[in-house]
Image (cartoon, rainbow, N blue to C red; front, side):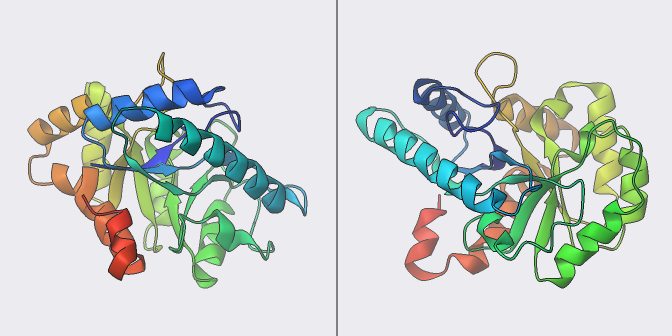
Amino acid sequence: MIDLHTHVLPGIDDGPKKAEESIRMLADAYKQGVRLCGATPHVVLHQEDAIAHFIKKRQESYRALSAEMEKASLSFPKLILGAEVFLDHDITRHDALKALCLEETPYILVEFPLSAPYNPYWSEWLHSLIVRGFRPIVAHIDRYLHAEKMLSDFHGLAITYQINAARFRSFSGRRFVGRLLSEAAPCIVGSDMHNMAVRNCDIQIAFTKANKKFPKKAEALFSGTAMQMLKPYFGGEKYDKIAY
């Protein structure tokens, strides 16, 4: 399975504080069947130097985690670096925006305010990203207060919807997923894991429930669609980085 929305890098956002917990999270994800994780820490772009500052912190965190992973006699998913970008304004004015994509791809994970009043400019900001060549992934579409309005306004845009694995645990969550699958836009499942306590991976049980409720679409939701998205940008030797 592929999980493109995780907060596994230590000491950078509201995910794990120490690399030791990151190790436990990644080892648990591997046991659940995850073979590739997108490390996507939160970033807010309100200052001109926000991207450069974030990239520096992300690299330091990644180096610290990589060192601990090399010491551990455990199996882990492969990691690719990205970000979860808070979209509370049009971010396309930032020249270094490409650095926030999932490595060499045009895919950028974006999130909106969860409970703020609906903003009719959200679809325009997504469109601005698409015009510049980005392919937005809307993070945890299932969590928004205005999810139905968003689905309506975003219809027809070249975007991907990411669903949190935890949503498959409830009947209402699975019903929302069914509603989402009726949209033309591609959908992927991500854990959005932050820790080992209350926001852990949860992918394995989600896949089991999805395979029962949506047997023809479960494989695509948990791996197939994400692989199709990434593979064109990891040709040749780079493909080894994401191949099972």
